[in-house]
Amino acid sequence: MEINNIRFSYQDKVERLKGVSTTIEKGKITTILGPNGSGKSTLLSVLSKLNQPTHGEIIFNGKSLVQYKAKELAKNLSIVQQTSVAPEDMTVEKLVYYGRLPYQQMFKMPSEQDEEKVNWALAKTGLTDKKDALLSSLSGGQQQRAWIALALAQETPYLFLDEPTANLDIFYQYEILALVKELCETDGLTIVMVLHDINQSMQYSDRLMVMKEGKLIAHGPSEEVITKELLQEVYGIQVMMKEDAGIGKYIVPVGPVHAK
Ligand code: ADP
Ligand code: MG
Image (cartoon, rainbow, N blue to C red):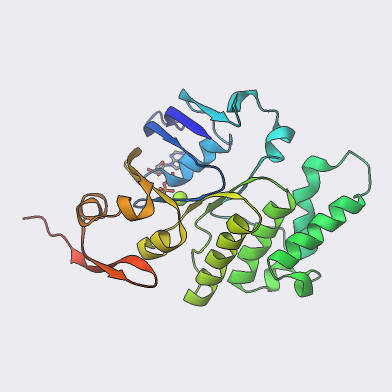
């Protein structure tokens, strides 16, 4: 996916993306970092055609994103948004079946292939035993996995995840990250996700994109992008850079950089 000089404003005409250009590499995990309000979710919404850029172009599989019909795009790209709300009476399996909509014909029963894919998505996310449970009865981690299962049932080579670890305790955070890694390595998915934890981002991503005030101010291989200077500039925090034989580079935040 080629992103060429994307600009975007909501109705208020304030520019929220100010000329973003980069390439999303196929078969890799890319993580978008940046402070609250820097434009991460907005960027994902434009990359998944939920919003139209006011300027610039996105080339997806050799074709401009504007040329994709909704159904065609839904077979190639799925997104789990930051806040997803399901109706009260929704079961896990029913939710995951929504992922099959792009493949179904109106007034037809789900096919064998639909059933197979739903079962695969449930198994992949460890929710087979929970398929008849109400979504609202699940833990936060399980709910997050149910939304990911919906996206997986969509059978798309590209998967976008907006803050998939938000509001989860550390066990469930790593459970989601391990799933993301497996989806990339075993199933060949291209993943773009938004995370807040810098160490998790370095540990689980091939590439990073760092946003600040609507601009992409750094992008590239994870270990190259994260520096003391960058984190000071983007977040206003002071960190120590460390390295561990097992997990590679990591940071230890020291505190805010106080303005003099
Ligand atoms: P992030 O995901 O990095 O926290 P967002 O992309 O959600 O940031 O938001 C970027 C900026 O756009 C913020 O200033 C936010 O207030 C604004 N914004 C987000 N959604 C809308 C909207 N629907 N209408 C107007 N402004 C919005
Ligand atoms: Mg966001």
